[in-house]
Image (tube, rainbow, N blue to C red):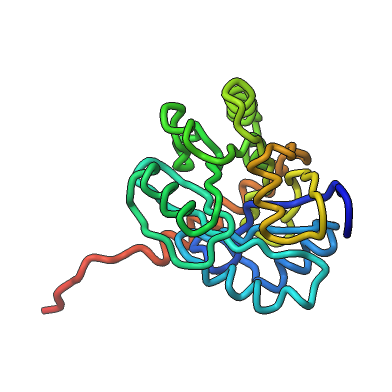
Length: 232
């Protein structure tokens, strides 16, 4: 690949390494390949286990893996793209953004304003490298439009993402990038920071959304800590 090329990148995808997702890394990469994505960000919750596995097997598929992680900060969730080590959890957003950048990654805020999904509030969004302006799970589109308006107003790069928690939803929404030169992880990150990107795709169907949330609730109930009981 040489010269400027337009391609699709889904920067926010989960595997079974996330507590609320299902689907093997292989299933996720296979779906990305079949959807025609050029690159995919594996961003499981607070772990890079899925990303590391994806890097190990990406040679089997015609898709570039951008390792990453969705980090639980004290102020909401943050995507660290270009990250291959386990992150600190529970620190401030500002400190976590610094941690990501110190490791050569970029910091993208996913599903901002959506407090029920641990979205970061407006007052903390200024110091990041990009904002997710189209999240496929925002079924009504209200918060997506709010995020897009904010990113446009302050000049932040806007990304689209599937936020897939099931393989079949990978690539439903994505980010269209303009890459100059051969496709590499660094060039993907550089294109985002430079704002050579735009959100594309559609929202997840309501029926799919309800099934996924039901699965997540079941897994939460199954794995939640239980109080010790004493048998007499």
